[in-house]
Image (tube, rainbow, N blue to C red; front, side, top):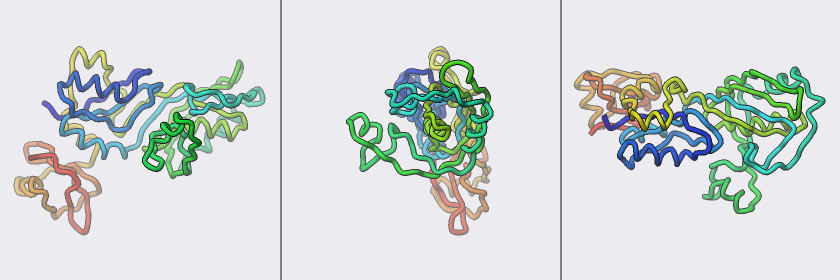
Length: 287
């Protein structure tokens, strides 16, 4: 088995590229990519594709994600997380748990969110974080995101700056650092992220993630067919349909949306979507 996904439980202190480099050595191939980066300070689910499965990654990047995070109120930083320089401090003595929970509840639903300035978003062809590192002022435009769920699991207000533990389920492109920043702003004290753990990317969560140490002892891929069935709607074809797919032909099928199609023997063949009254190829993985 040479094509599939590796679900890594990324440790803190490593970049996503560091993890890719390690998995390239373990897999014995250069063809390894990731579905969405994690900041070096963050831990948790990082989805990697090996060989043909790298072509699935662009589609997986569009799926919902889950996070556990800790927000510190009363301190704002240049990066909206603990790695940035402190730009302001405020007392949080006036905040109580009910006030914090009420403010946090307002970050659920369809939101217009300004991404953090040190994001990977390109501004005139250059990454925003690189512009910040070069001393430039960066102002990013608000963009629509959806936070399906934000659960406050703990609030600590008794000593020092208030801290809030949250679990978030959101659309791809949502910045948890921006939620920390905006929650602090709403409460009038500033805020930043001190811990972030990604708990899920689409259907892949921590229960199937493996540490780099475990992968070093026993390297295993989630087969591309299994990965595709987990992430997308699926349709099993007859031989005639499978032959059409291998040539990239349109199919007379009523599909619910982006769908993984399979040969009678279970081989994953392609991703198809409904378009102009037929099912048409988005990406063909056979041949």
